[in-house]
Image (tube, rainbow, N blue to C red; front, top):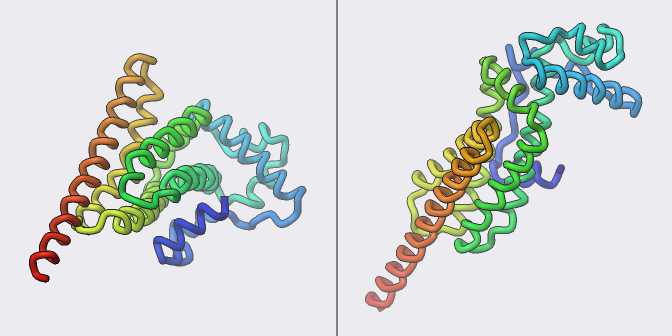
Length: 243
């Protein structure tokens, strides 16, 4: 897990500034250091994931989360200032896993021809992740309803887009930087939303929607590869003529 995060950070080449204002209020009050404390926090988060993911954010209180976790409500507030801070921790863990899947797919790209396969692998990884954690769709809806949490989600997508841009710029010489960055912004934001929608459909519609998503990704990557080849060939041709 740490290797995937490091790869994202290395390519983004940016260090996050300390959270301020409303974002700072969503930071955990303290990070558990001892094994017993970490287990307690994981139990709280597990209870929150179950309750909010099943019933929705508005229908669940911190008191209910504490009861489901089998801890005093004071123990919850010892680590989290409010319920939004709990949701932030849940989504942060989920987004870290998303980053891992993206890096696992694109970290192996060595040449342009690897991109279509990497794209398909990343989509399959995201589909498996969301299928294994169906409650995250409900939690994600709670994130989108909160301005601060939504910005944290958007920031994570920008970091993924930055990482993808570094990969595409490396293996697709000759293509406009602005275009490749736009492709990567699209890839960081849209597929996960489409997959969440697809998982709520009947099996037949889900299969069609996911097949269309994969097909569009394959066509776009194949087009970029072909254009990069033509651009490289044009450069070689001009170089030959000048010599």
